[in-house]
Length: 416
Image 1 (cartoon, rainbow, N blue to C red):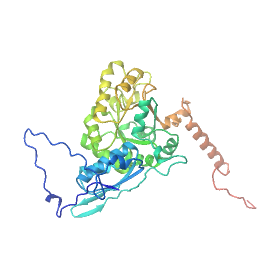
Image 2 (tube, helix red, strand yellow; image 1 turned 90 degrees about the vertical axis):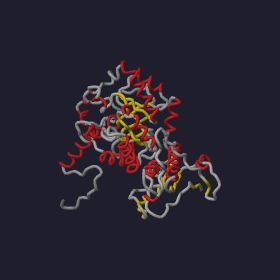
Image 3 (cartoon, one colour; image 1 turned 120 degrees about the horizontal axis):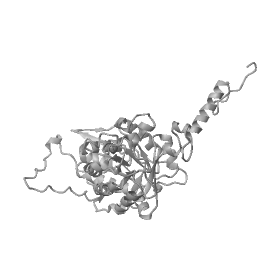
Image 4 (cartoon, helix red, strand yellow; image 1 turned 180 degrees about the horizontal axis):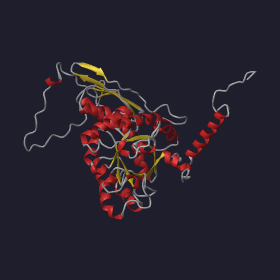
């Protein structure tokens, strides 16, 4: 057993605590304190590396002040190693929020307000990703280290966009590496005219459904339009809300190249960032391209934008992004960007084998859109046609007075 220091609060209100003096003019602010050293319960120094070696689950109890920093440090290391975390965080403030975010998925949080401690009404689970399918172990989970290793080894990363629980379960069993909860749900599933209509509350509901269906892959969720554009503080609040309320592993920021300070702030809060750039549905406005007329796969990013996009990719990596999503990359600039940065570069619309991996909407991969009924798609299946044929057959049985497939069997009695 290992314990981080858990300082006890002094009697009295929070205001009774002495505050650090403000730095004077020309004074360089002191660097952030390092995480407190860990000690065995008996008091002897302990090595975090040796404690976590071979560990599947880590449970952390964090007190105030230095305990928050230690918990955030432990949570970030566990996440990088694919170790499930849970915990209890005592106290209030930004450092407590960062500790809660780092101890994902779905940590418990105890909030101390004045002299009374109250339990926040949040679900806490020691293992948010179990049970595992037959033949799978917790160690089979995909982690950020897994994706980095794939890039180093030249193995392609598979990402799928999903918007509901059942599809999430299906794609997870298909051994994809990343399940992305996209704000494309608004246009493609709900019939919105553009992606800007989706709200934060709606994305939380969708992300919860998908998270409950995924046990192996990493799960990311898109920021809706708004929090990123409102500044770093709003971005951090949104990211923390996603992690607390949905249990996702990463947050995906569209148009992130224009907001490197927000990427850095979210990363500093202990939340990994999946940064999207290129010509995206949201940045298309800046390039004078209507969303419905976004460049086709043949057009993609023009060569004249090479230097700008290379700079954007490097800027996002320096800000702390752990994954990049290069939209409309094209084979020339796309390959150049993938070689220029150390983090994996994936591509959705307009991507290709020249990147480190691909993102594909599950609905597009299976031909689910109603429009494909009249125009057979070039997809791996034609789910829209299958659904249409099945519902039509069900309707014929109902109208003919026949039992429907899968319905409760009814035994006819004499005289009927």
